[in-house]
Length: 415
Image (cartoon, rainbow, N blue to C red; front, side):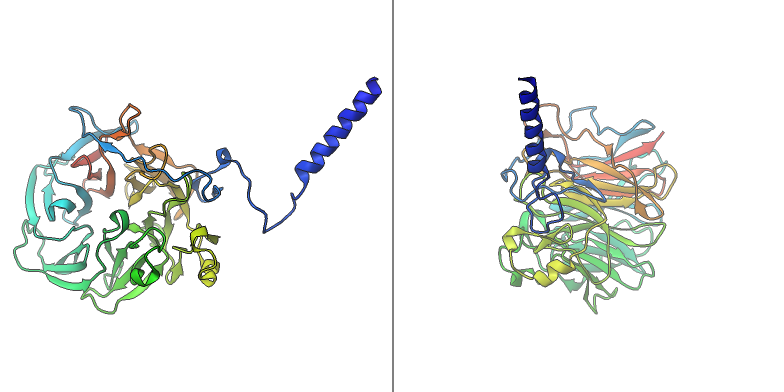
């Protein structure tokens, strides 16, 4: 009897091994049956979920504002103070060489100027620098001009260092396609390192090209123009909603933060930060994270799918990663700081923080870390106090974080 039981047991193990090992060799056509709990959404290498592995859901945050005496939470060794409050949708921050801090209050259609005269992280003066704009976002000082990117175009104004208000009428030097899907109205700008050109981000007008690609002309791109607005060309394409732009300090490479597509499930598609290759194609709308074809665009532009570049570092699906800044002082660890505005197309809130990605020799290394948190309330009702977006470093060395939902710009100061 014992021998018979042993034989049956061995036979069962053999059958189990055959079943589990079947098809374990290379098979490009095999469906990836990786369970959801082994999916990874962060890092230079990711394990992607299957499309539609979970239902596409909408969980919108309920912005309740910041309770008195409450602030975001920074790591040990830092304190958080209110640089400026009672603003109207402060979305982006730009720091001039003289230390002036410009804040785009996008819903108010204005740019405000702040000065911190004693370096404590709290603005001492505020000026209404420029009004009557159209959803302003990116800002830039280049030569004798102040540039601002409205949702429908790039404008420039005569400027001299120290100006607290611009009264001269600006010149629209470049028209841009306006509007867009789910807040893809932002237009960011950055000067080339030799000041000979300006990079301009334009997000897609749709989630995944559902309105027809003829509606996406000049969109989902990083454009580049001369300082006069002429000689426009596409620098990089297939970037669904590129927002943050920054120069990596050790290599001088251009990096961007990209808000990826919706409605493929909780864990697809990861937002990312990446170095930007000139003439590179990053997949949208035909593919994601390299050559993974979007099933909603099946069979379309397979030539572009084959060209799609794998981004450098994934920062989580639906995190709405928009802000991007690199540390340039020893007060903050070297690497990229990413402003995550937070999810709506996921069963549980994700993002709503500033994420840190360490760098070495110009490349991401090691594990990402939460840097600035506390934007989400303690309950289960999707309540949030604020939503971080733009990040910049003040001349005095502290970090500035624009919180458009909390109507505040926060300063993170090293102790």
